[in-house]
Image 1: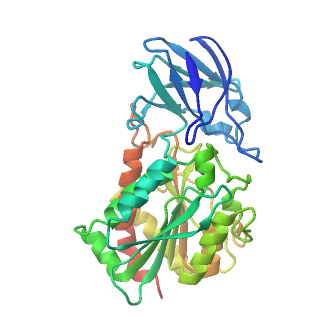
Image 2: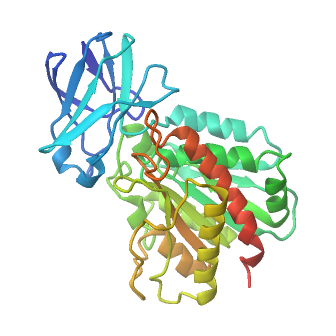
Image 3: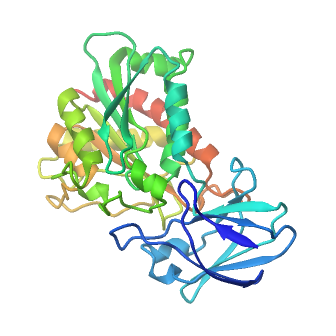
Length: 376
């Protein structure tokens, strides 16, 4: 038997393999950081053998509550990712599985590789609506890609969608697939109606370096990008620096930052209630958007989520608070689960790439319901 992780988004440290039922592993910490929780590795040579893999440092990971009722994903072909028996006890995460093939991959959530990211951009570029701009480079020398999507010239609302500030939240880029597929479908009446009024700016992956390195939460320099928005630097957080400059150049009338939440088994939206100059109009608009998304997707709910920020308690280091405050626009953070949607559970797949894609499509329909009210 052999376990390896020397590939895109791979992350595991092999401590020992004494037998199939005594495999000891650790998750590697994000570079220059204390964060870790993402894992992604391949097991070979164990076909038909019941394996017990113990991740022994799970108890000190970034979000220990994320292990409660959690099940790891596995795949033979890296296309279909299914859930396998997983238990968390006494600081150890134990994955139990008997592979049916010679090689099987395990991960925290279905990985979204930088190669697939390149394919996503290439597919988008086949549309005449799309312009691709490389805003600059990351610390590891990867491009920061911005898609501008518009049908014609003239005045348009500036609509921004970004995803995967935290690279281990790979569900955010799966979401982008469904979102872009619908937006670029020129036979879709919702997309056509939106493009008559809106110019879209889309960053499918805010953190290419962390994604390739197999990080949970940070970039190559160990920076949590969602704490860099008030004062980014080209030396430590070029990803935010470059995108923030593009926002300043083009304006923002609507903004969504797409994430995943380790602990909560629900899809929900976090808003901007704590910003100093919050307006009743924007608060109502945020509520209207949430209700629209509930109508368009039974996978979305508003009962469970983060506590509302107290008035004047906003953290402008965070993208949503910074954007809502700076541009006086409707801004929000969409969170999806690593586990399953407890309201609509799927025993085999849990929350999955396919369901992420469907939620991306539903968000476009919800935007269409409120687009008339984005400007006073």
